Image (cartoon, rainbow, N blue to C red; front, side):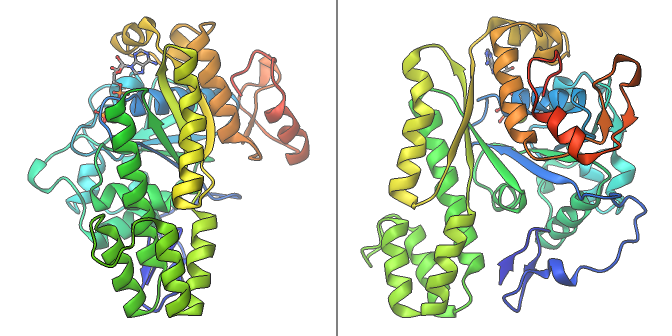
Length: 364
Ligand SMILES: Nc1ncnc2c1ncn2[C@@H]1O[C@H](COP(=O)(O)OP(=O)(O)OP(=O)(O)O)[C@@H](O)[C@H]1O
Ligand SMILES: [Mg+2]
């Protein structure tokens, strides 16, 4: 059983993306499918929603069609970060099966180019979708008409949160330079890593072994993912190869928020190095954002910081991160000429070059 990029778990060991039925919702992306970016980190209050709202704004300003999705059903507040009013329809309607078409839950925010699906909870006792509903959600997200779908994850390591993280094309892990945030970030990465591995393994015995390794105090002596890899390789060559391959594909990217000192900045490199040594994975350090009192003011003003204080250091760091997120992706609109802010991009080659150019006054 594997977790496909569309979030489906194939019972036959294959990703079910190849088996996905043809479209029916009328919201299919024309051209490139949406690139899904999840923003998680394990701990609450580290700045995930703040980061997402600002990255979304930067991407939209650079000509990308963005849909921000509040997948934090238990503490939904992304709409406030984006300056949108309390929504009447939300992901909760999809979870409760009142609405099957995600496209109908998308609404405009005050930021041009940024639309969103809100996550206001209607029923806290059943905030998280069932597994089947989760699978449908993943498929629906990938079909939305957008260049980027940004998923704001809740705190914690609920299986739904891990699945949203794993199904994304890219997962950003936001950490604050505090021991509690670091601890939660590693717990989150560890939980996501083992969940991904268990879903990728085919053999029953091997999957059981992964489950054993998830208990840090297991009696089999499996202390690290590398221990587990060696054990699987000796048990089943094919699953061993799958393990190594899945390990290579698991590439979370680290963002440090609330940076105050030079030591804080180094934290991202330290985390990246721990990930390499402990998990054997490449976790790129994407960037950092400094602690800035204006963040609180921008949230109170319901305006992303990159609009509220566009010239501040924090805004410049956010732009840098957004630029890395966008790398290699063609914008849908050409924003290079002031009179044509929403002109469809004609030539992918030309627009890619524009995307990567910096210092033009545009975000990305
Ligand atoms: N770089 C920063 N500088 C100053 N304050 C910040 C910064 N980033 C975030 N904050 C503050 O932290 C608060 C929490 O941020 P945010 O709501 O984005 O966290 P979160 O990780 O999404 O939390 P939750 O898991 O509860 O959804 C914000 O209201 C803001 O005041
Ligand atoms: Mg949040």
